[in-house]
Image (cartoon, rainbow, N blue to C red; front, side):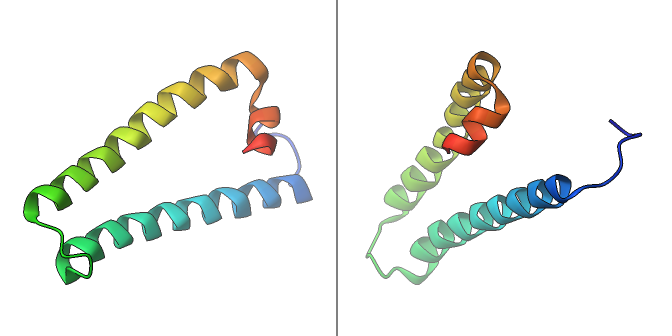
Length: 81
């Protein structure tokens, strides 16, 4: 892979992954803003639960989609999602 020349496909992958990374960061900021700014009048317990479910969703989603990727292929799953 290291010997392959850089192509438009590589650039598209980098842009796609960068966009996903930024959107993940925005999600974290939304959860944090809801906890600190209290626009939804959430209690400490509710903020903690929201953050916990958010993290569990990421972990379980990574495990599930990782196995699914092994079954149907990375390209097909990336295109599907």
